[in-house]
Amino acid sequence: MRALTYDRYTDASGLEQSDIPVPELPADRVLVRVVAAGLNPFDWHMYRGEPYFMRLQEGFTVRERRTAGADFAGVVEATGSEVRDFAPGDRVFGDIGNGALSELAVARVTSLAKLPEEISFEIGAATPMAGLTALQALRDAGGLTEGARVLVWGASGGVGHLAVQLARALGASRVDAVCSGRNAAMVRALGADSVFDYTADERPTGPYDVVVDTVATASVATLKRMLAPGGRVATVGGISRGRVLGPATVAVRRLASAKLQRTDARMVMARVAAADLDLLAALLADGRLCPVVDRVYPFDDAVEALTALEGGHVRGKLVVRVGDA
Ligand SMILES: NC(=O)c1ccc[n+]([C@@H]2O[C@H](COP(=O)([O-])OP(=O)(O)OC[C@H]3O[C@@H](n4cnc5c(N)ncnc54)[C@H](OP(=O)(O)O)[C@@H]3O)[C@@H](O)[C@H]2O)c1
Image 1 (cartoon, helix red, strand yellow):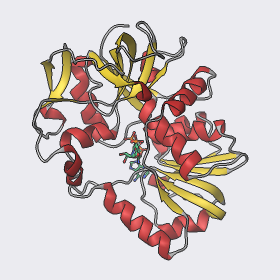
Image 2 (cartoon, protein in one colour; image 1 turned 120 degrees about the vertical axis):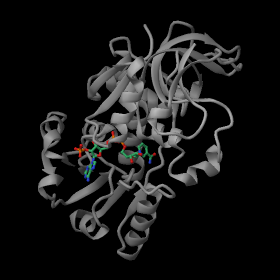
Image 3 (tube, protein in one colour; image 1 turned 90 degrees about the horizontal axis):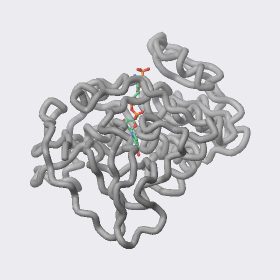
Image 4 (cartoon, helix red, strand yellow; image 1 turned 90 degrees about the vertical axis):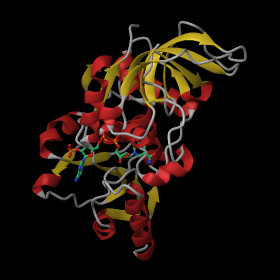
């Protein structure tokens, strides 16, 4: 079967289409025929092996050929003998960490949810990692409660544009956003009340109960000034091309600075949870969550798609069409 693979840490240009064996199906897992794969910065962190500290967990070298991609949507092809909740023919979506850019992928049942009939595979593939991250940033790290005033910083990217919509769905009374001016209209259309263009040095003033930050370009002092009493900053990611520690440097600096300035700043480490995927599926079905898919690439152009993603200015999500429904 066809897959986008790598046998050493590499940039996107070193990824290649390979013919690899169909993976074995353990008793507790599900084999999915992938229709669409959604792209996330996580994908390039994995195939580049950057920041380098990731290699402590992922291996100092790539010993066996790996398949890129984490998020996907498709149709269940077969189920292991212990699987009860899924059956061949089910439409599903999920986040499997790696192996999504492949005609067939093996998934744990805890990494999957059923994709509502009326939702396309492209939209399903665009949702899991960014949606889980946005949801957990707002609800868990941010502690969002009904009526909260929310700011999403980095609101035009994968996580940010879903955070704008999810903040509304979770009951925020006000949602403001920071992004570049070229994406302001899109973010406003997603439900943001005010949009601030960071390229024109526009700055929100608040007060906010929850700030979800995907870029970590503002200082803690700046964020502190815009927080309401009891407000929290949930930091999802940070812009840093440092190859050794990458965004971890930004995170450590921010946490240390927040401690000194008595500001409630928390890091988000998203986890794949079936119950949260089910919640995202319900929000997709009732229209409160609607990922923006900027472009769908054919499988042959997956490297071009990942190169565009690495550029860091994606509008919404990029999706690769892997196979037929
Ligand atoms: N902690 C976790 O569990 C977790 C999970 C998922 C993602 N992440 C991390 O979170 C970050 C965002 O992920 P993503 O999927 O949303 O990435 P993405 O889709 O690539 O979006 C990045 C966005 O950053 C914006 N941006 C770039 N430079 C900016 C600046 N100087 N100021 C403000 N915005 C700027 C861009 O918007 P404009 O084009 O409008 O500038 C772009 O839309 C990444 O670092 C990712 O690795 C962490």
